[in-house]
Length: 81
Image (tube, rainbow, N blue to C red; front, side):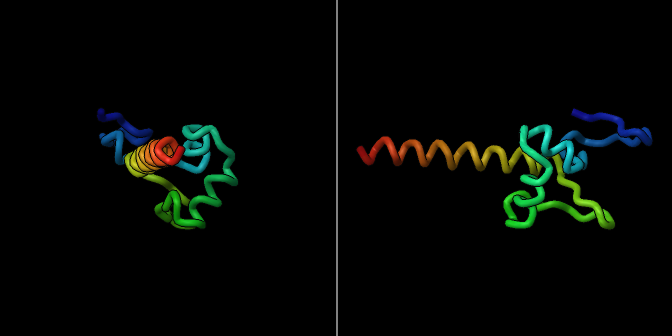
């Protein structure tokens, strides 16, 4: 899906840069949690000057990895009984 940003530039949805507030809202977590993940290299941000930004597609990919890891862990735990 394509959208126009505030400067009327056509942007692919996955290329949209998200602020820490955007990422925190998307994941229903605090800003501090997002920054901790950035420091631990879980959710790697792009630097725009002094600001951290995340590509929407990278956040979605991270969510998918977390879901896959949880499913694998659940399957292994179920098989260990």
